[in-house]
Length: 379
Figure 1 (cartoon, rainbow, N blue to C red):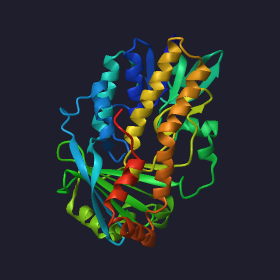
Figure 2: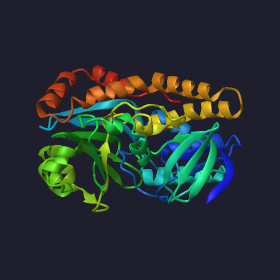
Figure 3: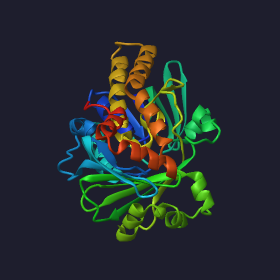
Figure 4: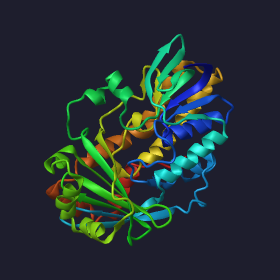
């Protein structure tokens, strides 16, 4: 099937970045189509903590966060593999909400704004010719004036285009596994915790109702050394941290089987590929321990929408749109990603994590400075 319509914007990927971008462009009366390979609502691997810098923006998009009864977080706990515990107040704070609920609500808002959402649809190729895009999907071909890649950490398109982070040799920044559970717990509902274990770390935060998100990131080597058995790895490696072991033993799993993702990379990425605007994790992924990935995706959608709207209205050229977006993205996020990669290297090793926490524990001002270096201001 070939769709004869020409859309103003075609978005590949219906996560936070894609849905927020779709809403902003559609509410200016432009024709937007969005492709999502899953069907809403569904679960994603995510720490499910959002910095307060995104609160106003989400409400402006049409998500009533108060009605969703999200948790409000203003305390941080970090522990080393050996159990050394750091407690600190969060400078700006944040809130917890499941992607199952948040993405579903954003998808509803997008549809209300007139966005055509194609669920259960995989995009296999995006090609640019004669100032237009042709998207080849599992449900046919579609044309658009602007295309945006908002498909997350890694996709079939990344592989087909041989983006550098896909072809890079395996290293300390590009071969991770992510695992997420929802649990019932009596963990404090105003606190987000980050507990280290050998070659990884696990976060816990309350989301809506009585549910908590328990999400961890570890090297593929840890899983390989456990024979590919998640339960064995959780039992033998994660539980070496006594704080984490306590949470694991005293919590009830809502679902026995977790949501997982592999081949996660924190290597540098380009913000524009083959004239496609990359937004969210497709443009660059901050390490999860920084707790700022969701806000970065939302903020990136805002700066992308501003430039796309200027292009669609004839105020700037395609080249201007691409250059402006890349420059603004770099100004806002490059230092955060750099800091995140640096901090990532300090975690997951017993002696290094212990030493780092012992050095910063007596200096709460330093802890707050590190947090601010990986976060932004309300937008």
